[in-house]
Structure formats: C-alpha cells, structure tokens
Length: 495
Image 1 (cartoon, rainbow, N blue to C red):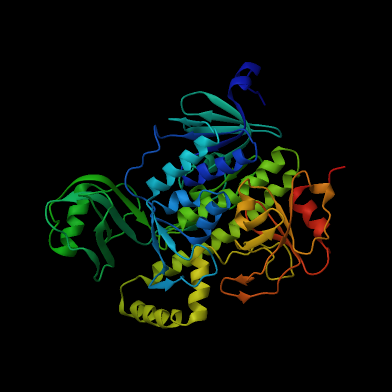
Image 2 (cartoon, one colour):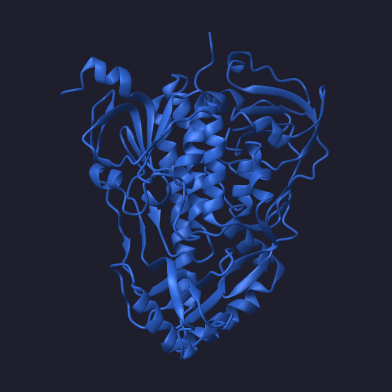
C-alpha cells in the first residue's frame, strides 16, 4: 500500500482521528486527551452551532460519567432537574435511586455540545472544522483518512462518530442490520402568529405535541405523520398541513429555524470494530428517540472506548483489549434498541394497544418494576461481563464518601484523570507491578453499598475500578483474582 510522503505525515499525523464533533466525538476526544494521547477531531460544521434543539436531556449514568471527570456541574448549572425518566406510557420516579444525581437533566443538545467543546478546548484538542471523511485505507500500522477536500490525514486509529449515515461505517463495509421504519414523525421549531394549543394531543394517527422551545418566540412541535415518510426532509407546507389535520389550523406557523423527520427505524452495526477503525454513537446504532437515550448511549460508548484505546496506543495493553469495546457496548446498544422498539409499539393508537399500555402502567406502578425499568432507562442497570462473583462486578462504582489519610474524598474525585483505581479498605494489598498506571488508595468507607434496582450488597474488602467507573475486581477478604484482573485490563506488571 502506498503511504503519504514523509513531509505529509509530519504535518498531518495523529495517534487518533475522531470523525465527528458531536457529543460522542467530543467526549471521546476528551477521554483520549486526559490519557495524553494525540487526538484530532474532524467536524463538517464551521462552528459548534446546531440547527434546532435536537436531543434534550442527560440521564443519571451520563451525569455520573461527567462527574467522574469533574465537569458535571458545568451541565447541571444550565439545565433543569426532573426526578423522573420517561418509559412510554409512564413517567417513573427516580428520586430514590442510590446516586448523587437522582434525576434527568433537561438540557438541549446545543448547550451540551458547547460545554463539551469548551472542555475539549481546555485539553488542547484540535477540532478541524469544515472537514469531512470521504474514505480511508488501512494496513497493519496506520489508517490514511481521505477527506472530501482532497487532503489526507494519517492516524494509528480512526473512530467514526459521524452519525447514523456514517461515512466511516460505510467505507469500512460494516453491515448495519435492523428494522426498517414503520412510522414517521415531523419535528420543527418555528414561530406562530396565533397562540397554539399547548401540550399533548392524541388522535387516531398518534400522539402530537406543541411546547416552548426555550428560545423566546419559538415553539417546538412534534407531529405523527398520517403516512410513513422514511426519506427526505419536510417542507413548511408539510408542517402546516399536518397541523391543520390535527388541530384544524396551522396557528400561522412561519419562519422555521429547523424542520426534520424521524422514524422508528432501528439499526445496529454488526461490528463496532474493523481492525484500526472503530464506531461509536449513532454511527454504531440508530433508534427512535423515545426516552432520550441516543445521546447518552453515545457518550457512554466514548467513555468505554477511550481508556482502552489510550492503553493500546501507549503500549500498556495488547490490541485485543479493543475487542472488549464491541463485546460490552454492542450488548448495551442492543438492549436500548429493544426497549425503544417496545415503547414505539406501546405508543400505537389502536384500542388493543391502549389496553396493553394501561396494563403496563399498572405493572410499572409496583416499586420493584419501577426501580428496574428506571435503572434500565437511566443507564444504572448496565453490567459488563467481567466474570462471576460479587454483585458489584461489572457494575458502575457508586460515588461513595471515603475517609483517607489525606482527608475525606468522594470516589469520583479519584477518577477525574481517567486513571484506574484500587480502593483498599483493609490496607494489605501491594500492587507494585502496576503502580505506574493504577492509583492505589487506602480508605475507609461506611457505604451504603447499594445497587440500583438490586438493593444492599455485602461490603467488599477492596475494589478495582476501571477508568470508566466500572468495577473490574472485588476483594472479599482475600486477594484472589486481583493479579489476573490487573493484567487483563491494565497490561502486564512492570518489571
């Protein structure tokens, strides 16, 4: 394979190129930068500005992830806290969830992206704007990324965070199997000359809604299409006609700032990795936006991938560690596709589906069912397969209060630099072979050791926490399995 000249490599080479500067790409860039990896972001937009509000919230686990990096307050101060998650056809109370953030944060995607972009800028990550991937070639050592303007970049790894129509996924030849659309919805932000009918309305076609957009004078509306429209963007006339069909008037709609359609299509990449090319966010999975899970799923993809990729690039871990990214996140994505498909099905407006929805509301009224489904929707129910044993294994570490020699600390403050962490509650563990890459903290902790939707579990004598906040090993009075867990996740011991 022919490679660019040495001068081209000198000026255009990075360890990682991230295609796409949305929430997933920005989060991944930040994770890599924290680990000291040379990363650049390619973004087709000239600025971070977005048309329309797009996604509108951050779930509990995403807020915890941001808290692990010390930036959660930047988002919280801009948003509105809602102590519920939406699982059609119900709103589920999560105010009793065992977390510091027992709420959904209402915050439009534009604010989320700008805040992430500011963080990435502090970490000195270059965002190369008005650049778009046209294709790539890869070999055993590099990926040559070909851009639409005729230039190229070289990287050790290319990550496609470039949306549902991902050019990176298509160029890699990765399949995108799933389910075709059966329904479509119109969504828009515009001005109206007349006072609209605020709130939700349901008819034989489906559910419709008009609400405040957050920008003075603009309204945000979502309308169920009477017929499936799976392709093409809508016109103002389409929006007007749909409003008249539902409300008898279009309320004098004019000056749209954003119009779009979404469907109930659900697809997932057959593989999240093809050698030196990986996918994250909507490039890896698309689904209807019910429950507001898409942005959150992508950000958490990035946090799972970032530390693994950084270790491989730094030579700490073997390249095979990247295969655990697909194994862990593909399974999580598949569950999200399943539950969004179920919610769309329950949203149909025929009498039999309404009866089923009524039964679901009754079932979700039981505390056990409520807690279980709320944990599923909020990301707190995730469990990665890191082996059998203590209930903490593979689950997210809670942000517990610790007492250490240096004073009181929260667990998440120890994860701000995205480094692995061994918490030793007895004080008899020696990890000399991994001290160069794993933080060791002797601590006392009174708990409570409570897992979402599960309840109280036995207190461990030690826990090994990955940089993404998930527990890789639990001590139960002995060190059995610790050496193996350290080597599996963080490379062989230093000699």
